[in-house]
Picture 1 (tube, one colour):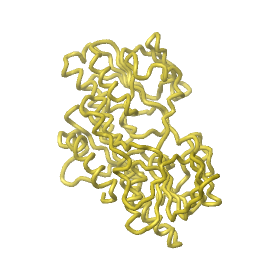
Picture 2 (tube, helix red, strand yellow):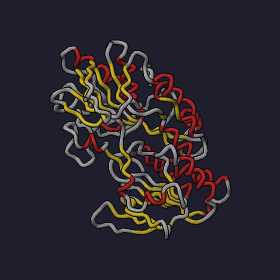
Picture 3 (cartoon, one colour):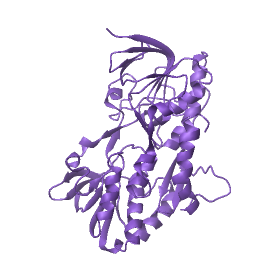
Picture 4 (cartoon, one colour):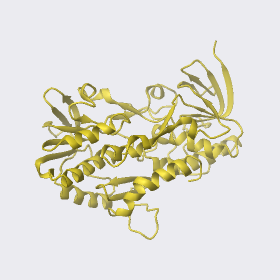
Length: 399
């Protein structure tokens, strides 16, 4: 028989977004529950550095118990369905959890099976991905083993978490190969579904220089369609009707999967009509467009900006404030302006901090220094500063 419990605020997801919001709310709300089945909590931005040989994956991992705010009820189960008409969440374990306000932030789903042939070769034969804790070390192994031949780096169409990651690893790889003296012997290809290297022109101009310096062949408006593991070939299809498909051989390939909301979110009353099925929220208040006591942030939300930890850092205080307003019976007033940042590692010693908002114009947050170009001090921010900020400030509701 199903167990029923009720909380003032129920948060689905104990990742970056869920823990950050819980930490902020617990100061003013005495009854919060977080639904999450995971034993581990990961700082995923570090996986790019793991794949590039600049960090170990263990430094990205802590126990979920260690980041769960004190005084918050942890329901160690997976959410499975929503009934917003009756203000309840069903869990995989058979619980019915009621709420006054619901915050939905279960993260994003990696749809590996959408590219035929990929799942058969992941982690083998030179094919890897930094989008997995288990695979990121394999990326570094394959990079080190590549001394000549063809290296391919892919990016899918549609929203993905950290949209800069597919090209970051290409730059780290080229930097490594140059230091080893083998870059000239490797034919490097970066295939992007977009018409340019980056959506904000001032950053695109700098990245074009990086690409030219490494001699990377960039293919625009195309994406990976299938992989032939036996023949070690990758087939790409055009994003435009007038484009043509093409095939590239590979000795090493970094693959990024298509991504979407978790399937159980897609099939819920909270989803948008789009196939990706993200939670349908107002892009400024994060309030659901049909259910006013439901909010969403992070990768599973429908906000039209980059899905990054930096975005969550700016979304969390807005959501926490608007949840408190909703609990008081008033309309949300706090607004999120679309801030996101993409720390683009252009080598193993320099980083370009691309900060922007809904206007798609630069939105720098660090005073006195020019962050519009790759800098060595920004590399230290990426490797040391941002992880410290994450574990010690952001997750604790202090930043």
